View (cartoon, rainbow, N blue to C red):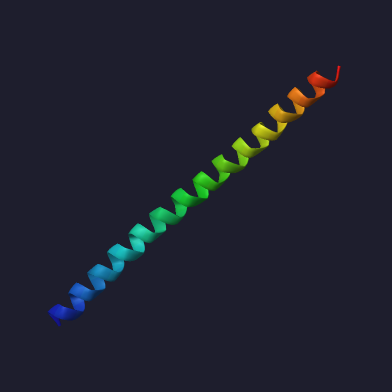
Length: 52
């Protein structure tokens, strides 16, 4: 019975850490998307100013 309890605690910890990691990845994905959009806008502004 003790072995089963240890396995359940380990699985619970792994799932908890995995949940935290997935949330962090989602957050970083949104930050990356925002930075990509800002980069495209900056490139367009530079391109438009160079044409005038």
